[in-house]
Length: 238
Image 1 (cartoon, rainbow, N blue to C red):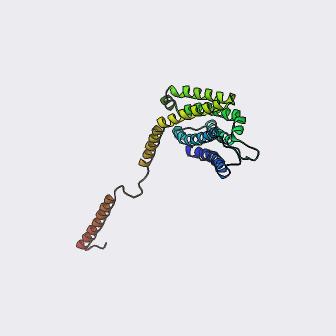
Image 2 (cartoon, helix red, strand yellow):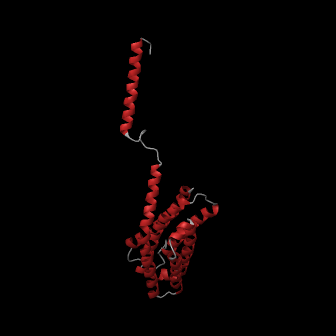
Image 3 (cartoon, rainbow, N blue to C red):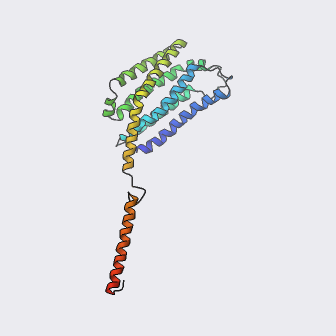
């Protein structure tokens, strides 16, 4: 069931990443059409990395043995939310936009509101992956989620440029430290799972060792020659 679910979520996350990359490509192609704001680009990079790592962390869902429709809808809704955040962050039509700063500040309530919803959903998603996994993250995880939600709330309420810069730097700094500290653990777990799966796969060769195959073929040939020799010695028809 896990493989069935990740197919659709992979399509949704792929569309979100494509939307972000197309927005950056438009900026590169027409740099003078809309004034660029580095804070807006910082959030674009943040969402790109988070969407990629969301796909990485969702590998933990393979541990769920029994899937329900509610869980299935929850995971899909989670992926749809990530796409909506990316869609709000990067406009599809820039004809009426003069500055990305004005656009971002004007859409900040939608953007930060969905980020807060993301943090809340991520809390439920982490719990769904198992109580052991949730406990392994320690007390830091719920405190960090609450702290990030508070920072996003400040960005939602204040349109001031200094506040927006501070919110971006705080969120990126913590997420970068989180990736550095936890990425290797997930990588090792995923690699160990791949090794365990490979260990149960049938060997591509009929025998695990080619020498065993050659020895078995040699023994069969020797036995056949022995039977023929026995028949000839006893003058029987084989």
